[in-house]
Length: 448
Image (cartoon, rainbow, N blue to C red; front, top):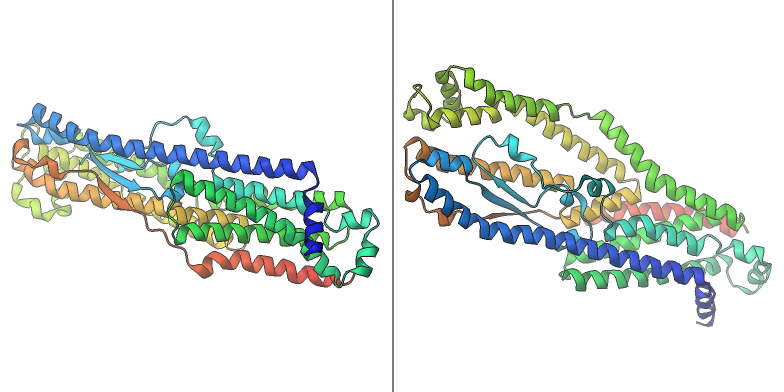
């Protein structure tokens, strides 16, 4: 115990260490506060839409009671992506994509990717959430605390004394690293405690998963430091090499992988889908009405009994045009979704061997803010939109009055994001990388 006490005092005697620890805690708290504001902003939007939707329907019925088709041209129905509180720790895609979709029964593809009005400069710089602090800044503090664990002893001339008096040189170095790991573990405990109290996080499996993966990530960076210091070089060399590894793993590798995935799976379908959807709808103004209605009946044969009204304007033909906007863009839309899926799969596969990327994807998955989960929400919104169409189309075509419909049944509906992470898939990349670093380093230390 006396040895550990001395090693601990040696570790924290530097003002630079204390400044680094305090700064890291402050940045972590700032990240938690930013996450809290993000969640409150999303919750405010949900609360507002609940109140607004009922008033919105009452107003539309009072204005367009005798023309249901016109009412539904304006009427919007809310579909809400209920955020997990952990999204405050790992914001992921949730700052770019809205939590609440308010859609009409018109062509869905034109509404699918509508987003909130947000300052683009804020989106470009991103959010400082706790996951950013853990993934980007914790490794820097690991480097600050451990780069001179061995070289300091050599440079001050105490290594020979340690080698003689210590039972194990390897055990001595591991003890010094262990003290520093415990110190950073305490910082993690503090930050997750603050997060739990600030964001009112439930102490569920996902919360402990996120904390456990964070600890494993810190372990990985200590094993990287252990590997570098095993070369027995100077403190300056160790610091430079460790910072270079940080730069490569944290900045260069993710940027390179992003460029690779983007070039391998380009998305021209994003533009072609929008063009096909617009053409599918707009050219129908100059197309024979009967031809448009026939295509509509191929999609919905159950409505064929409403006939082929082609004289003047009518809502059957109008909503048939709207439907054609979605139908004519289906091929491009499916290709676009397939490319997004391939991008996600490729990123997951590559990230399985890169700890920092793996941790970011795992955090997003646990928080329900990954791209895959956002696409799941959009697909569910598509089903919600289709359900609305099937309910209202017959009433529009039959010329029903708006007051004949019970509008109180149309309350905002919720989508629950599926958040799951396989234990083996979550732990394996970090554990394997750490064990590999240790196995390579131990023989080099023993030769000293």
